[in-house]
Image 1: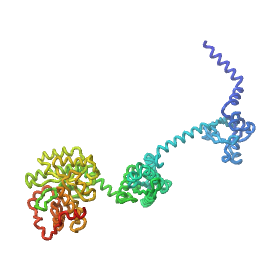
Image 2: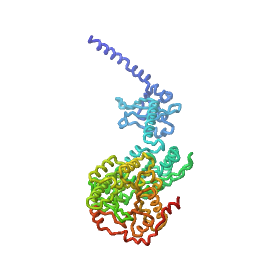
Image 3: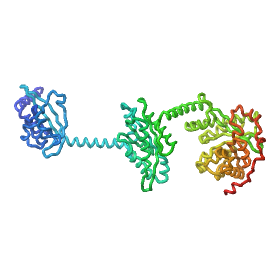
Image 4: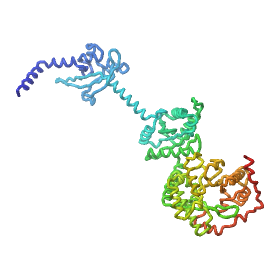
Amino acid sequence: MNKKPGITFGIAADLIAAHKDSFFRIASQHSNDGIVLQDMHGIILWANPAYAALMGRDLHAMLGRNPLSFCLPEDETPSAAQIAAFRYDPQASSANDLALFRNRHGDGHIFWNQINQSFHQFPDGMWISILACRDVSEQISKEEQLMRTRDDLARLAATDALTSLANRSALTQFLDNQLARKGAGHLGILQVDLDKFKTLNDHFGHAAGDAMLVHVAGQLRKTIRKTDLAARIGGDEFVVVCPDITSLAELQIIGASVAQAIGQPLRCSQGVITGQACVGAAMVDDASITAQDIMRRVNAALYEAKSIGQGSVAIYDSTLHKRITDEDLLSSELMTAVSNDALSYYFQPIMSLEEGDIVGLETLVRWHHPRLGLIPPDSFLPVARKLGLMAQVDFGAMRAALAMKQKLNAHGPNNVRVTINGSAELLRHPDFFTRLSGTMAKRDVTAKEVVIEVLESVVIHDQDRVNPMVTTIKRLADEGFTTLLDDFGTGHAGLAHLSTLAVGGVKIDRSMTSKICDCGPDAKIIAMIHDLCEDLGFYVVTEGIETDEDAATLIGIGGKTVQGYWLAKPMPADDVIPWLTSRPDLIAAIDRSAIAPVPRQRYLRANS
């Protein structure tokens, strides 16, 4: 049993020795791969039938020739001199490599020839080259198709479907690549935002909106440079990355061209539509800057452009950088101040012009900044609103007002009501009523002693009864609070809305009372408001009264309750009771003989 394999191998070895040449000849003649033997000058010494079939040429006609003279495409065929100078180098680094060439078939069609080359040296020192050739055109075609499919998918993944511009993902990758480049300090960014795009959508329909976005994309392609990348990052916002920008001035010129191009009219099925855009511009000025940093800068520039107006271009320069940095610092300091309950609350009196009594104290917030001194509310309340801190600020005002009312009830006039300004953030807060009632109970204050002022614009935004602001005001009225519409007459609503809201009165805005002595339209409107509110039984406070003349004119109009610097400026809590006990009698100082009374209902009837 153990001898049979040895016997079999011995027979096979004898057979191989006897027919070795025949085996090699059979293998070469019947191989599917073309096999070619060449000398070091590239001359064909021998080739098998598969090679002749591969090349589409007569086998004997190829012997003695260099394939370079017939196998390459005509436009790639070397000259006779180049072919004559051709030499193989068996020691070259590329020897024995697998190579791919475009070859020309005898009938003229081009195919891909994959060649595996090796070299052999005979005992006498002669070298020959052995080439094994295979037509891989079909394989290459499939690979190219796969690559095209892959590229198409990659392009789709990086392209905005509507505008065919780059999308946010492609923008991020391009921007990161540009920032990684040497000399990225010359990189500019534009952010483009369409003005009133929502209005366009609502008025003309989404088809028109889509047409405008496509129009913007087309205008960007026409306007920007070939090296720039335009991307749509969402909605009506676009970003352009501009490599190799030399200055902010150059970037601003490109931004202005973009804004002008977008402003060109668009004709579509809905008619002629004109879009306007604001453009923010920023440059990379620091090698360590990140993509997030530069996008934050260009976004700040865009908001600056929006504040200027339609079609504007704003650049992020040193001035804007300082302002943004200062605002960031102020925001951080304000968050700390609110968190530590470090804001101050002042009180400004409200007086009856009929009796001269102080009937109210409005609670006003102030910020004593350790670095900048006293900051007025107009300078920091917008920041607080942006940071979502308004409810906390107003809760602080609520606590201060109720503490003041408790102090008045114990040590001063107890018929003075305290007024709290209620922002939308405060009135929407889920704990508003709980905290209000809890603090009132702690201070032994009743609802009749508290007035809530609400900006007219906050509640008139939506006339629907399900509006949370309307519902909150109704609940305040039901619980006994008086609610005033603050800044009344600034154009947000009208007198007719007073009957739809559960308010107890209005506060006439100082923008109207500033011209009360001119006896012009503002004075007439103020007279109408007083006449109508008297008929409706509403309480009216006129703020912004600064002089004796203002007060006298208001009395002539029929005003009964006043607030302003003529009476007193806002004062700290510790100054309120001393002021109440020693205040001057301003009513007595008014020259009533100079007051020209206004007939009741005169202006109302004249304009009804």
